[in-house]
Image (cartoon, rainbow, N blue to C red; front, side, top):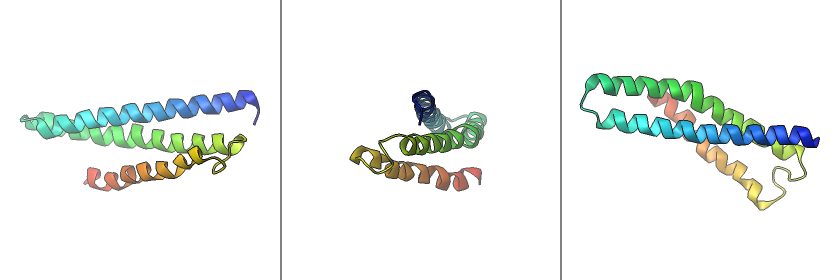
Length: 108
């Protein structure tokens, strides 16, 4: 991979990963608000916002982070499984699974 392309892919991977982390922090804040609120309308609004942020922010950032990470690892001499620290790719699946499983319960 050309150095310019590698920098673009790395920058996009970091951007999507940090964006995903921020979106999960917002999701957590909404979940705490929804659970602790005595106001029914506020709790319902928090859960609607959680569903929207999950489907339109968390899932796309999650997939974009995975996609750009795989491109970055396959396009450089680091490789996907060449060094021990690139095995975090496997750990990412551990973090992606609750996102997908949680959507079934969130939408109901």
